[in-house]
Length: 124
View: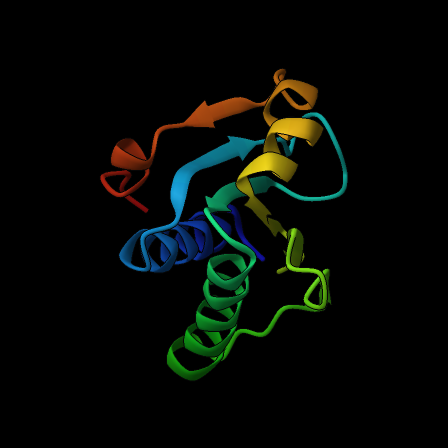
């Protein structure tokens, strides 16, 4: 996938999560730090029900609207930390306490954060 396509994918994911009221959405550009992905999107929910609903809505809308399905999904059963792997974009949806415990933002602090407000304005 070209970098413009990857950025567009990240933007679509953030838009969906934002529309569904995900908490504290952060986009980290990690492509120059790891071969795992170009972007990590980290979002939260206030309950396991919300975390699961966010993951379900994201998965359904990305598939129906854009024909994109995650290559792998983890954590649906417990809904404390759900991971949706869109190859170049990995989405982490956390329950609030689980997010504080693992603190991925600190772990990947060398990645450049792209503020959600700026992500929507980036030209592709």
